[in-house]
Structure formats: C-alpha cells, structure tokens
Length: 348
Image (cartoon, rainbow, N blue to C red; front, side, top):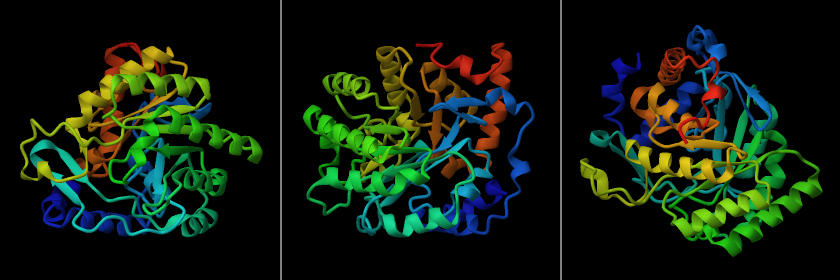
C-alpha cells in the first residue's frame, strides 16, 4: 500500500505528510497480527532488565507529543520513544523546517523541539496507558535560561509513565543544548538528575542521547561520566550538522540535523568505540541509517543492545519493521546464531 501511495505522499511537504501519518495512526485500525513474522522469538532481547519482543525501536521525533504510541506498537516495534518533550508547549522553529534528500535517502530537520508540553502529554499518558515498552525523550524549552531545571522538571513529571527517560543533550536545533557535552556542565546535570531520581525513589532508567559531532576528548569524558554516574544507557547518535560533502540532493545545504543513510557509518564508528570502552557493560541503542535487516545487524554486532529508526520509515513506510524482522531472522539462521542477544558486539 505504501509503495502505491508514496509518489502522492512525496508531493506533500514533509511536515504535512508527517501530520497526515499521525492523523491516520489515531484511527488505530492496524491489525497487530499483520506485522508479526515467523520465528520472531529469535529476536527477543532484554533492555534495562526488561524483555522486548525484538530490538527494533522507533526513534524520538516521530511521535513528538505522545499521540499515537500504542498504534505504533502495532506496527511491530519492540519499543517506541516519544518526544522530545519540553516543560512548556512550543511551536519550534519557523517553517519550512523539514527537507527530504531523496537522492541521499536522508532528511534534514530544524524543527526545534516542537511539542505540546508536559501538561498535555501527561494527560495523554494518564488516559492512554502505554501497552508496551515506552521511552520518553526530554529536553529544555528554547527560551529557558537554566536548561538543567527544564530537564529536572521533565524527569520529575514524566518518569512514572516511562520505561526509560532519554536526556537529549544532542539536538543541533536548540541553541546551547550541545554545550552539555562539556565535562563540567554534563557532570552537574547528571548529578542533579540522579539526586532527583533518588529523592523520588524511582527506578526509571536514564539514557543519554549523544551528538555524532563531538571530538575524541569529549567522547572519552562522556564515557568516563556515563560509567562514574552509572547511567543506564546511551543512544548513539542524534543527527549531524556535518557530513554534507558527498551529498547529492539540492537540499543538502539546508541548516539542521542530517539523518538517514549519510549518518550510518559515523554512528557505527561511535557505537564500536563506546562498546569497547565500556566492555559491553552499558547498553547502547544504535541509531543512524537503519533501513534493512543488514543495517540493523551491523549496529548490533558493533555493540548495540537495541536499535532505532525513523528516516528509514519515511522512505520505506510502516512495513519496514516487518521487513527488518524477516531479514534479521534470515541473517541469524545463516550465521547460526540462535538469538539476537548472542550477536551483540561480536564485531567489536
């Protein structure tokens, strides 16, 4: 169906097409069994000591305001991450702010954390309890002077609804956000978050979403802090505002975060580096250029416990999860691997 509709969908502005997808998912009409595959038990895995039916997740950025997560679970995802959620509702940056790079199988966005804010999102989560493993991605409002306080407010209000909380310090579209990769700022933020977590007596796991544009020194520092503060996991990586040299599409020079195929190798390099440094002790969620069973497998054997996609679904439609599951099962059988967990980090 998607291959038939794609030419029409791609005549729409990317953000209009996204809004249409959200509205369609609100009908919640998709039969869950349609997206199951034979042998799926080979893909069962664990993340933060919880069992997942498969390691394929939907990255934050699609369901920004937590409107359709239960419908998305029906597409076959092992987990879904919503957000980025900020304390106050905000529109984000001026439109147009999302661009397809069809020749490069990529997107550039400069959305700027557009979302409905904590109050509305909390009401949605209360009335529509997540049916499966749900991550919530949090961040600060654009005009906030003290961004750390926004992170704390979000964690305080949203942790009770989440299977894990992602601290997003890596979007290139909020001025000053990536400053949190600096050792002193990040150390202070993590210390305050863990103090709050202890005060709330919550066991909600915390993950850190990291930029692919940082240098070796920052990578080393973040690695050390993740281990020192016993952060539950890392998401590698967010979008990049680099990697434009070899792009072919006319939209390649638009300002914003680049995602999709051009990010694949860069994120893979980060995953291998973090996995080696942490010796597999800290779960990694691998993101960037995943649109097939092979690209998912590559992330897993590099050290990812689980993976996330978004741009791949834009280009291949909602059936992408089913296709990836089928291909992963074929790869596991070919490699004589009984379960996907056994593949984690075997190429690092």
